[in-house]
Image 1 (cartoon, chains in turn green, orange):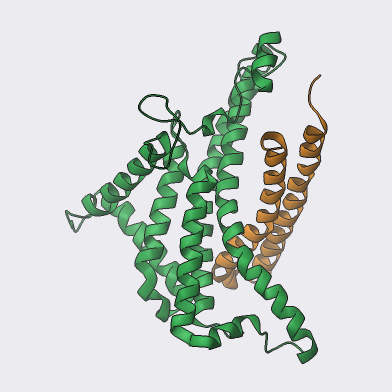
Image 2 (spheres, one colour):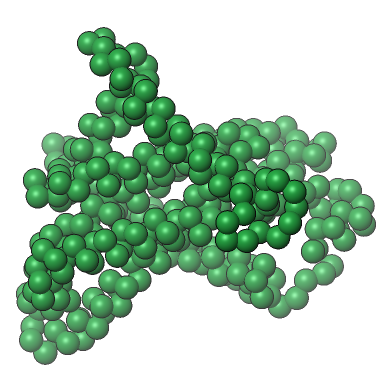
Length: 254
Length: 74
């Protein structure tokens, strides 16, 4: 790649490491090719994320204290936050699907936060991870729409408030925008995380150059603060869009 | 100097992130203007604000994706 040749030419002319190196998927044991069932660093960090979710929500609340511990109050805040979001966006009818949305939120927010630990691997910066999450939402919401409403679910694409002549054109646009949903849903999360971590690494590369290193360290600190915010907001956006799609499936008429 | 036309294309695609910045700023600015006119209605609209920001931002992320594809996949 370009990095090795530039680094060979001399220091100062290029970054000391490539900002995208942090996203390389490599096997944990040995260095064979990465196959379908190879245990990689992604597998490790996905497992750590799941363990953290269990630790926070199951172990944290198992004491059931009247005066909650720190872990218990975080778990209760998260529960209340997601419950209120589901209730506000989808209405009483959507509360039945709250466990799925809570699972999504906790998994994504903890994967994002764990990725911010230095030297950690950000699983949600990979499209392979987020596309699975988004496709699961897309397929379950579509199936749910047909099960709940039968064929009248297709009324989602037939905008009855528009003039009759415009409706076929709008139907095509609505159909396209419906099928683009999983694409934008997944790319938004992965793209935000990947871009933020790449920016931090670019500044980290500048920190090796003595003249600009103080500015670079300040910039890393500032970006890190922004990334904590972005991690939470992207998890929130992913979850609230799931709620919006769920509402469309439950009430398909405009 | 090394690089080829794909790198120039990647740089051009990065202009899209500026366009997304305009979009996100527009959404947030209009939200703030509305919220200051009627603060009591502001709290109920934060979810809409974030959905709007997410949609505006997604297109900027698409531009970022195009530039990534040009850098690493082409």
